[in-house]
Image (cartoon, rainbow, N blue to C red):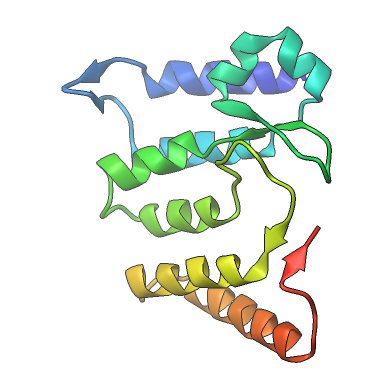
Length: 157
């Protein structure tokens, strides 16, 4: 855990936290993407998350309420959203949009609906037709369609 704290602190020092006209300065889409990737990989148990609110706030995490999985903290996708807002034409906007497909940004989570995932992937392909992630999205859509045709439940819990 200490290594992750150090990594995030060093990254944030490099990133800069000042803003001008509500737009981050001294940032780049690449740095935001790197921070997003670090934060989305952070695993912290509920007890520690509740005990150290600063860490959760710094990593832009929130607590998910779940009857099926138990409550758990997770990353909200803040850095990826910043890329889409402030650097929409960057080389990282498609990667950020793809990452957001698989992050939970709601307060309650009890199941995965693969139909919803498929809709998000189709929207991604329309928005980023030249993306290097297009083939991955298409393969996942094909897998979902095959599973649904074969009678697999669209609801996974």
